[in-house]
Image 1 (cartoon, helix red, strand yellow):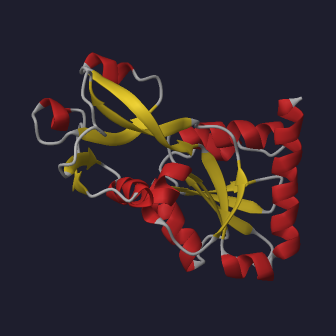
Image 2 (cartoon, rainbow, N blue to C red):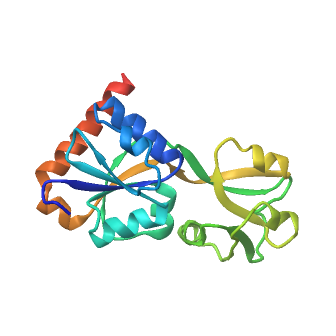
Length: 215
């Protein structure tokens, strides 16, 4: 990596599109990033930064290992994967939430038996119930977690909810918010020391634009 160019890993998909919208409004040239072809590392041509297009868990890995200085990733991935980095800014887009959901009419808390919960995010679910002091069996599901309570595998699910339409279509209702989710800016701990002025300049540009958008 060139000493005077930062690298920022960005989650591909909707967060990449929203991130480029933010960068555009900050005056950065995102043309190459928006039309990458098969390339995975693209320069911001009017700012000393290269964008690395990554899957969400890899954003954390690249930042944690120091091959990227900064990253943009959803809070859901941060909560599930964890890691050693600085979480410096809530970017405000990609908003949704983790919710605990059950079959309609189920009294999840009104029993002393050990409850079973399905989730694609087992660490998030375990931390949530541990904080409540509850004895819960968490089962990791890779596909549609809504099936687990319908099939009688579990009593509830912990999953990402945006509109709640998928839950309603499958006879499930959210009963508690587990955590709020949005895109976050993270920074490698060593990079913050080595390239402090450059990184603070970029954070400042982001903060100024986010404040402007709120007005």
